[in-house]
Amino acid sequence: MARPASLVCIMVAACFWPTPGTLGFDRSYWAWQRSDPLSEAEMSELAHQEVHTIYWHVGELENQSDQWNWKVRYRFPAPDTPTLRFVPVVRLVTREAEPLSTASTDALVAALAPTAKIAGDLQLDFDCPDRLLDHYCAALKKIHRVTSGRLSITALPHWSRPNSLRQIAGSADELFPMLYDYEAEPVLRSDAQPQALIDPARMAKMLREWSACPKPWHAGLPCFARLTVYDSNGKSRGQIRNWSWDEIVLNRALLLAGPVQLGTGLVRARSGIRIANTQLQAADQLAVRITDRSTLAQTIAALKETSAQGVVLFRLPDSSASSGWSLRQLGHLDASPRLSIAPSTTNKSLILRNEGDGDLPPIFSDSPDGQRGYALEVAFDAPVLREVEPGDFVHVVTSAESAGRPHEVAVPFATAVSFPFPNLRAGQAMETGLIQLAPGASLRHARWRIRNADEIWKPVE
Image (cartoon, rainbow, N blue to C red):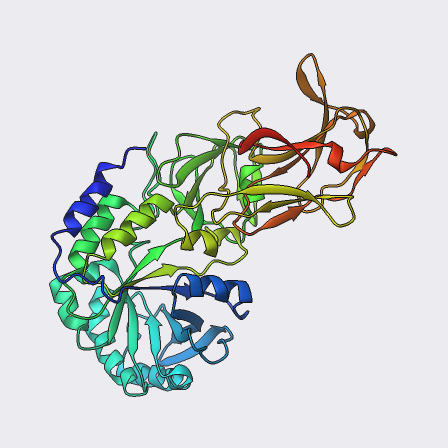
């Protein structure tokens, strides 16, 4: 596939950026809204990626009048391991016009002091308005006095401007510009494409501008997935939370409205439907965005030639669809999935595994009557099925061939069964429910394939 011209611009421009930061360049993650400790599998993968720091979201402090109170809190991990340290991150939120008055700042310092003592280091996440930047910098100097280690802050992309950098340079030890979500969702005009999570041309400009930063800085890049609802007039209604790929990929009421570019596609509702807790009307549109792996890899490569000391990915993946790519895929950005099938220990179900380092990504249909997503298809030479249950899959479809085409039939008349699914992450497995066969028949007499992924029939072994 030809590399987009704008990505080439990133690579070419990187050759001329000053003060290369490749030496000592590190990778880390933000762990967000999480209380569960890291699993052994996560620890192993992080070690493989040579990740030494996790910036762990411990909660949100909300400002009301001159007070700062905890709105939500998350459990901080156990003490650092020999290879991994954890830095607490506090999100600051306010609706007050003057949230950083002298009294308010003193209250903020007092509220942060116990958290600052947890690990020595502390990071603050605050979308500070430009008009309050001087006040924020003054507050940071006071906060720094209660930290025994380094104080870092997330930064808005446009703070790379010389006057902004001068303001914040003396207030924090490290800056973490979040190079995503830097603009409000635009109104979608006819045939317009939603903005990708990483826009190569804009990213090249931001990296070039941040290379002038006099302070140590780490680039924050996205690796998540996002759903944004647009009404029939193309106006954003906000994001959907707590959704699943099943609801999007396998939903016949959603139809791909155009090409998927840079991990971004637009699907249109054919009728009124509900996704998670959000109601969609007919003709509403849904922007489905997942970070494009190729663009992410090339951006990280270009970043290594800037003055940045590292990259921080948002966010550390978990089991939710919105966390995007799996942790293993992020450690092997060019890897592909490797699918296998095996009977369970009871020999009454099948287990589909992705044994590769790459995820099987979600795909979308632009045909009203087309098949959705992937499916584990299992076929026999005779109608030996007696009972089939979906197990980990959404549902099952039993069929038999007639006039050279498959048609849905009742289980006793079926010679094939399909288990649809939307995606399969690296290292993940899905097990069918009970597959009861006629006496004398065995799952090892069957053959299998994965629709839309591996179309070659193989024996069950």
